[in-house]
Length: 132
Image 1 (cartoon, rainbow, N blue to C red):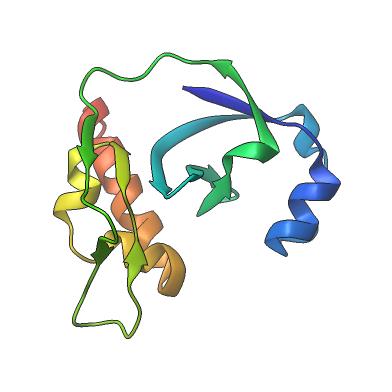
Image 2: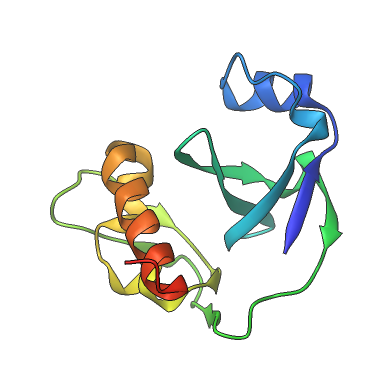
């Protein structure tokens, strides 16, 4: 699945990620999708970091979903927990690679340890493509 930014100024203001130039020109590969209530977010990689960005900031360029992705629907008010972190991630829906959910730290590392999250993502990507 591929997405493109509607307005890079709005993206920068809402996410406080300053200095992204020419995002309107970029096409992003969606790495996963999560939702809580009605707020859907796309996981994207930009500048060797992973970000959860809101769906309404993008339009879809290509809606093909990889066959190996898993779809998980959680019950109401579900929150991912991890003993290493003092916060919870509210989630009601997940669509993406199974390995992201099997690694108990990955979803939390996106927020707290971006280098670890990117290293895990990069390692999984290389393993899937056979470039290890």
